[in-house]
Amino acid sequence: MKRKNISVFDVFVYGILTMCFLVMLFPLMYVVAGSLASAKELAQNTFLIIPKNPTLDVYKYILSTKTFPRSMIVTTLVTIAGTLVNLVMTCLTAYPLARRNLPGRKWLMLAVTFTLVFSGGLIPTYLVVNSMGLIDKYAALIIPGAISSFNLVLVKNFFQEIPESLIEAAKIDGGSEINTLTKIILPLSKPALATFTMFYAVGHWNQFLQPLLYLNNSKKWTVQILLRQIVMLSSTSGDDDGMMPGFILPMMSLKLAVVVVSSLPIIMAYPFMQKYFDKGVMAGSIKG
Image (cartoon, rainbow, N blue to C red; front, side, top):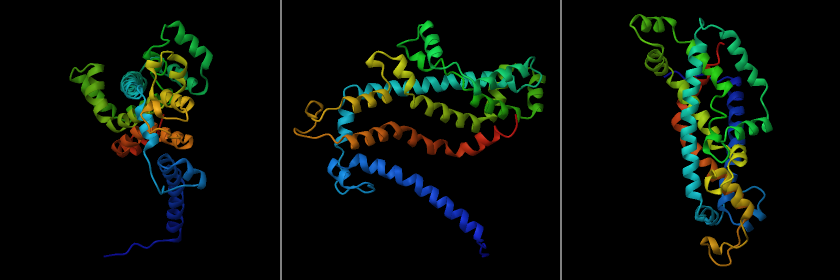
């Protein structure tokens, strides 16, 4: 068996990658360990990796709130519905823009790229949402961001890489544009669609400013807004939340637990999508 020669450059590259890995790993370990540690232990250790006496008290506190299950359901449904709307609108817009014979294609692309640099701003967007009657409705979290210009450009570029001969063959067989899109373009674009599904889903799950501005009814709050409220309004006694009498709520542990709870679903979903990332993103960014 031949042994691969390892050069000094290889050692340097692996060393840099290892350092980057540790730089990203230790903060994650601190967040998880801090959420499981007691207030006394956190006060005694400026950087904690493994708690001596781990406890789930702060997680019990978060899960014991009556509105938490509802907010999780709301966030999940908004994420699913919003992601589906994003994918449908992005594909329906990217497909014609990928066709070089589209009339006015140059000006349409100019309008799309213009929005990458300039946006309407917070107050004009709020006024538009308000004028459409979307305040306190879940549609306010979905419709204003139905298409991401950046993702649209990448998906359009990915569609352009599909051989034109396949589209011409579909036309000869009598296929319509919708049939060509659904039966040829989309099946060949699974890596890109999987990648942007993840991008859109993460964006919807992590929405904070939009629900904070547009949702006035606390029963419609998403999990991000609810967790913020838990941190802001949590008292020093957990008696009303099913905790032990005299329990002192460690605020730092609570804040770290909030980070874990809000991030865990997306982190768990990432490994299933990771294999599509490199191919999906790089293929769409090669040419314009």
